[in-house]
Image (cartoon, rainbow, N blue to C red; front, top):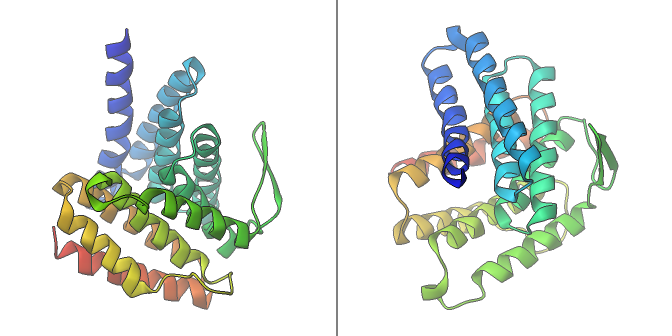
Length: 247
């Protein structure tokens, strides 16, 4: 049975990405693709009910991000962001990993920009209640996570740790618009960290995965007319263009 569970996980992980790529080719099949994404979400619910692993909770967050990409109306997208944030929050509560933390905080930040959340507020969604950190605490958590990933000799740091460190810098860059004070990385610093990571290692597939994440962020930021959201979207687009040359 363990094999069938891991096969099911892989299947649930690959399908949403495929559906997003199909949607990109032609938006005509949108309704059908949303039905397919719902099927993935149902499959993941079964897996999570069987065992609440951080990995499965992260996959559910990712499935909802794909659902947001394929959705066309603002309320649909916002609803998918809220669900994705919930599952990344749950994954992070279960296992304090950078991937869950950065995805959770980026999604909450998008919801703040869109006027649906406030830093420091209590959130209740489905049967779960949690508290959003104040922005300074969110930045502190990111700084601590960054230190824990990069405080080794370079030989001991894996590709995923380097990639996570770059994602933390990107997340901090996104949060900068609400935070004042030091420690906010510059665009150049963030780009350099991604570039160094990609120079070190990483398959084409992993790099394309990062590019997909940038696409998700720019798509989400398009919903906001706020000056800082427009500026952030441009920065992420620039980052994407510069990194795409390295694939």
